[in-house]
Image (cartoon, rainbow, N blue to C red; front, top):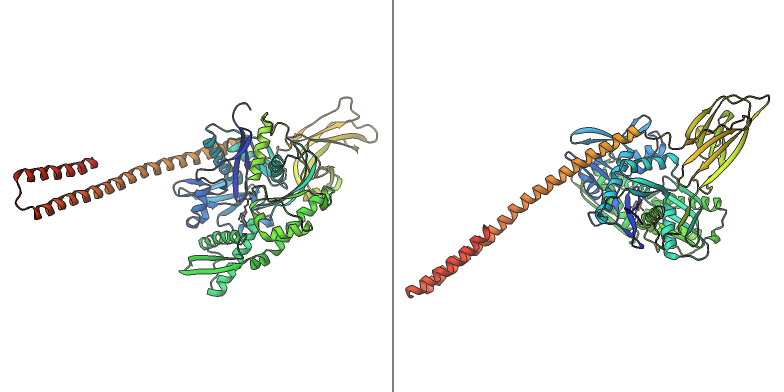
Length: 597
Ligand code: AMP
């Protein structure tokens, strides 16, 4: 492979992971704390901004300025019911700006508002730095993964965040597809096999049915729930313990941000413990007004609390199988991905659905997605290694695409789960001299319920007597860019207009502004880091000096005490003896004093 390495990034709701394909194998890269996943958390303090483990570690003391879980906000409006429900659990403030949610924090004593893309860019930038520190070179090219049911705007918002972070986003791919690549490369199938990737992470459940051949990965269908993951299970636990606290102490602490944050951290930890134990304790000293909250929860209680959510993970599986036109018996392997698939009850529910079939837990659920993305990045950069050179990945459109026709009706042109790349032409008869071609994404019958991707106007259509035939052509290239063009049949020269689906997103000026802001935060962080380093140097000098003085002083005192004791028992010695003892004592004291200089 020529030039700089390209990385794969799993940008998760809770945790993110970065990997690279090098020397014929995938390497997951550890961050500066030595961890292979980095919390997707960003915190703002009175002096600096921190990202990752450092941000998560300080949440209890700075809950309102610590931002996490916001991937679920991607391209959602504040009025969205799911956002409203999440907001109750977030201690930070969300405001609406130009119909988009913005996060409000206090940074260095001042109020700052940030778009989601900015926070996402901070996490991506941290992963970029992690890779650069490991590889010893600048990294630009990256493949970033998103949940399979991310729509066009959500994918574009992720791409924009990558650009703000200084990355050249080679491609956005679906998380289950990336996991399938990681699995397929290890398995090395000679004949085609259908596998189902079941991915339950922090915020999302994604399912894909993928046919894997010798280096080929053809996604047959994809389905998901953009609001079903570990965060929801944590929320149930938090509510459970808030009620218990109220019952036991007649105090409602749901509005107390610090207490709530500490409870949440304890709940997540208890949830993880319940994956390997049948009971987990929650012990929080002085949770509220000096009340020590010591309690516990059993695995069965947890399963009861989340029963509907766990069952809900089957819906995407059923939808994916239906869209792939496959029966569960045709699935060779069910592959578990994402931290939440460690929950035994979720495994039971899925295993029962597949009539007791053994689930495949052979790939690392936290790292597989980043590994697959790294392979895809290497392939796109033309890596000629035997392991990746023949890798071909064919994804599908997660939603149907179409145009608006009379009365606001959605006329679907490309059905969901159509293989990409794809070209589809549909003819319409019109009797107007101008039309607006409005392109939508979604499954609903009326365009008002779907997602508008962009529109353009077609004017000067020759109006022969009767109807004019116009062709609408939808072309999706391998990079998932949709181009819509029209050809007016009756005109001598075919007219062609093209839109790209990233038209409606951040402008160049907005991206430049965000890049500038990111640099500012980074510079502050670097200044803070240097200041802490210098403070550490001074502090350790003082501690070392104190210790050295104490140790050597102790030694000098001991030498003098020894000599005095010697004198006590050597009352009448020769002059030379006293002189020699004097020399020895002085030498020992001088050596100790020299060590201090
Ligand atoms: P991911 O997005 O794949 O990093 O998944 C993160 C989610 O997995 C978080 O909600 C974690 O709390 C959850 N998780 C990680 N490990 C476990 C575990 N052992 N048991 C239950 N949930 C877990």
